[in-house]
Image 1 (cartoon, rainbow, N blue to C red):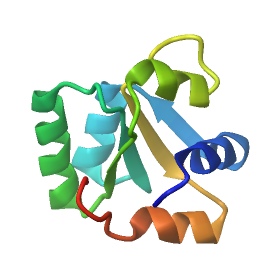
Image 2 (image 1 turned 90 degrees about the vertical axis):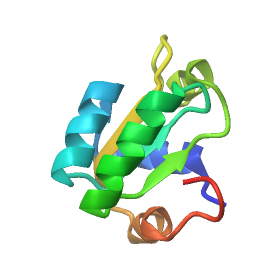
Image 3 (image 1 turned 45 degrees about the vertical axis):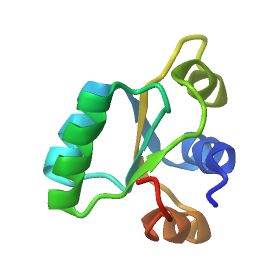
Length: 106
């Protein structure tokens, strides 16, 4: 199980994060990201579309087990966040955990 809070906090300090579905879709289409994290309240149509594009780019998509309001708080934002795109991450162990296949959800 991935510790999403740790990954996001590390990426916030040492890497590059983008928030929102549009940025996640662009990253999924181009493959220029480490991973995408989606909230549990992300609309199913967007989830399917992102997963499709991410699969073509070999980009891992992970589902955060809580709704977008909680994901926003973890990101340090005062608003709901449906998608977090991690562009770079300096911690190699977290990077390895994100790139590993997720059991069941993603």
